[in-house]
Length: 144
Image (cartoon, rainbow, N blue to C red; front, side, top):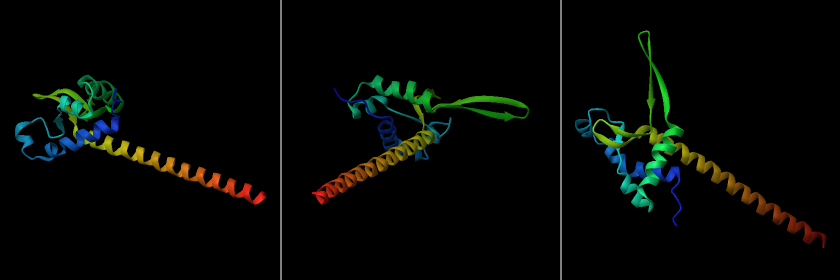
């Protein structure tokens, strides 16, 4: 059984595949609702990772959207308006399964930074442990 992809792997794959779509200036002609929402072929993403489509859908819609979506308060005159910013939307305009691309790019960068920070810490710990073991070995040899 194949392991499920990580949040970072999913976000990076979507970013890699759909960045050219996001920056294409002709998109505004096709989608007057805005440039920031990009439709994603979830079946293609699932096939890339070798998992069922519902795994990718569930991760985006239930997990990542709940974790990273947020509410915004705007003020128009004296009126307060709240709206939700979702990472993944079922439909935007006439397009299905859309990601909010700038938010996705920010999350991918942040998760990559967290992973790199973890890896640096891990490797420094491994090096420190190896040096400690070597120092212990040298001390034991000097005693003998």
